[in-house]
Image 1 (cartoon, rainbow, N blue to C red):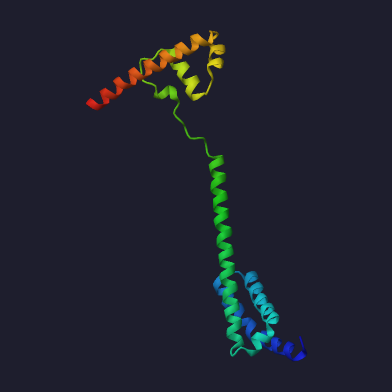
Image 2: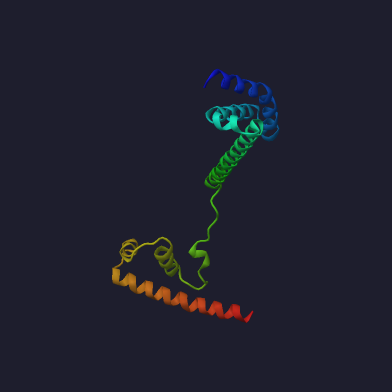
Length: 169
């Protein structure tokens, strides 16, 4: 950059930087960000000095550059805040007390024996296999399968009665 261009930029800076700073400060309410944006606008002017010198309104060009930088900063800040909110929500969910989930045992219809309830809960809620169930109950696998079949059949019968009763009401 030659001395004439440098003097031209200094003159623009001296007369317009305070006005641009006030505009940015009023919009962003952050003195440091306002100062950074004004400096970035003048850096952009220096990078495109040949284009701006030919521009009919260099101050208007600077104002447009500042306006663009303001919008960019606002967008970045909103994205940052959105991500912070998401992270805070996730942290709250992690630290929140666990939601009370109903156990299968609580939803079983009345009339099942304790053994039938245990079999159904261990198989469906805890996900135990027939082998694990037979080991837990100390019975052969075939006997375990038979008892599970009967428990399911009894459950189905009781739940159908409960359904019929609720339809009458």
